[in-house]
Amino acid sequence: MRLDLLDLPTLPRSARLALDGLAVLAVLGVAWWLWPVTRMPADVDLGQVPWWGGARDLMLEGPDAGEWARNMRLLSEGRWDELDHHRLPSWMVMVAALMELEPDVVRAGHITNRALFVVLGLATWTLGRLGGGRVVGLLAAAMAMATTHVMSATERFGVDMSVSAMIPAVMAAAALATRSWGLGVVAGGLAGLAAGLHYTTPPYLVPPLLLLLGGATAPLWTRSGVLRRLGAVALYLAGAALVVRGLLVIYPVPSPHVFLEDLANGISPGAPGQGARTLQASLAEVRAGLPAHAVAATSAAVDRVRIQGLPWAAMVALPWLGVLGLGLGTSRAGQGSPWRALLARTDTWTGIALLCCLAPLPVLFGVGAPERYGNNLLGVVAVLAARGVGSLVALVDTTLRFAWPRWPRGPLALVVGLPLVGLVLAPRQHQRQTPPPLPQEVGTMLLGNALAAHFPAGTGVASPIREALVVANLSFCPQRVCPTQATDEAFARCVRVLAQECEGEGPIGYVWTSAEHFYDPNSKRHEMDDWVAARFPAVSEVVYGDFSARIHLIDRPVVGEDEDPLAGEPVPGQRPDGSVPPPPDLAPGAGPGTGR
Image (cartoon, rainbow, N blue to C red):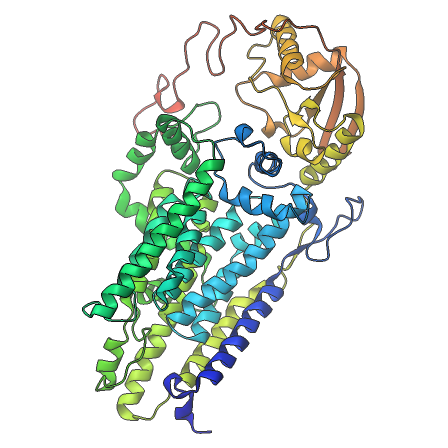
């Protein structure tokens, strides 16, 4: 076969579809190759490990996993008025929908995240395929799925995997809509769903719209180009509005002031015990050092998708070349010389739209947001880096075509791209088998089983480990923080709060644990633990490694319906005299720039 037949425009449509099918199978093969599986600890039996996962897929382990699972159960039961407004609804909707087939909330959440891992690969492949070719798409998918953050998020019960997958999926749908404007409604629906995932994701309604406005294949100055753009944008807005409106029916919208506070704490949680942050305070931390934050955030993002063996300077340059998009656009006839053809195929608009997806990185870095929030955008960084490889290949191809007009574009992409895919995947060969869960994670599951053996479903138990309560299908109590003072009177008052707020009859369940970080910093629970242990014997104890927990039964006192056991007590965060301690950076003797 002549080499020039590998040039994409010369291939028949059936051959191109066959190659796309093989590329998709290759992406699925990469997903299988990277599929993380956690080993079961040898000294404990946590139940039947699912065929599609490992020991960690049995666990309710991840950031705020217990709260997410609680909300999913409420959503699946139709108790929307009890949902917590601190967690946006889209991921909960995905899991609650799957719970129609898999009633167990833990397994349903893990299945959803495993499926989203595959979605991430297919979405990044699509973005690379539409803007660089099949090999670029395969490289983008491998880089996105092989990041340590994504491989970890795949196994955890948390929203991170959905954010990592849905942002590339929205951009991929928008890129497809630039070629078939009727898909604008699909892109809009996915964008609305992505906006409702987390407090960091509402801005992602904008980049797809930007791509639709400038990325259509028909020229902007033609009547067809204008109509395609207007049609795609109108359908996009309709799809996004419909999904957002549906989510607002579920999501308990607080007041604008509370929502802004939730937004500030969602992107940059304050230190324990310091109370809620304001949006103004969060943004004020960014303004002064924005250029430095942008440089640091870029360096950190590139480092996490770095291809081993490539020089650091080349790795930093690749995403910016991907933004430029040399030679990554649609090929058209009658473009003249190879250099004019290269410029005519430049796809900078898609690169700019993808770059806009990374705009939150400097802000998240500047406000000290959790590292995983920025890591959720690594799929977009991977696509830009793969596009940068495609741009380099296009530049070399053009140089060779200038000397040899019949030089094909296919072979060089294979020669350069496939070895890079191998360099991405090779270091992950031994990371598929992840270490056994930590003692605390196993202990939480064992505690949940012990609680289920002592209390009927729905009973309220005072446990700082909420994940164990979800495993046992119990409810968390109390909702108010107590005790706030380490005195016998404060402890007795707190018991009366438990009697009011812990559902059920008979003795009140009370959990002591060695995992101290679960305790509310505003509460004197450590002191109350000792007080409870001295008066009420433990009915069960869980010990695994360095984790231990005890279940106590407290005699339930009779409390009047209108009684307020905490009347006159200082509210959480206050001193006994009612004053509020200053933040650490404003404490006496703290100089300027101390920080938190």
